[in-house]
Length: 204
Image (cartoon, rainbow, N blue to C red; front, side, top):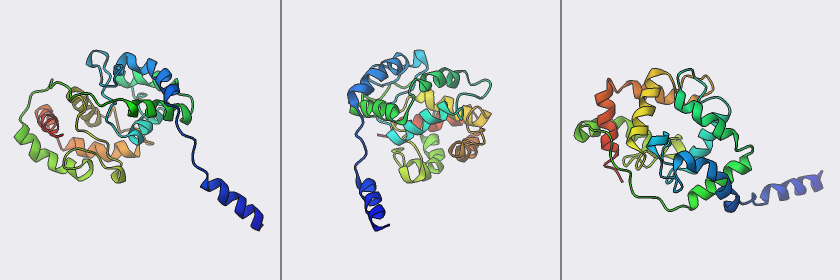
């Protein structure tokens, strides 16, 4: 019994296998079609920015697409585009490789603004969002809140509308999305959504 305990302890203490950045670069070629070669996003292909985002959050979203937690709701045409792409990453190791490659890329300059709104009004609305996403929209791992600063404004607008309409966060398995739905519902109309997104765009 003592020997077994020692063996198990030794196994637990072994370092996890490092991700393969080169393999991730090869796998990312598929992703680059929509998310751009620099992972900076591509609005014309409906691909948001990935560079600069927390890897734990990206991994969770890839799993959500693979598991049908995202992208399977009728009407979610953009999520439906992503589901088969996520399926190309067959294992956690493959996902980790791609994320390691994305993490190796220099973060590109902030995207150009495409949304118009009142940043001052948005600042007041963002006070609630800051509880989870941080005062500078930097994200919070402990609260499972992703980084918002530096993300494409058109994408943030779309996701807030998706939460409000039920295209996102309605799946019973999407516990994190369920937390976000009532927060998005606090934004009474499209102008309020635009205002808060424009304010997020001022944060660095």
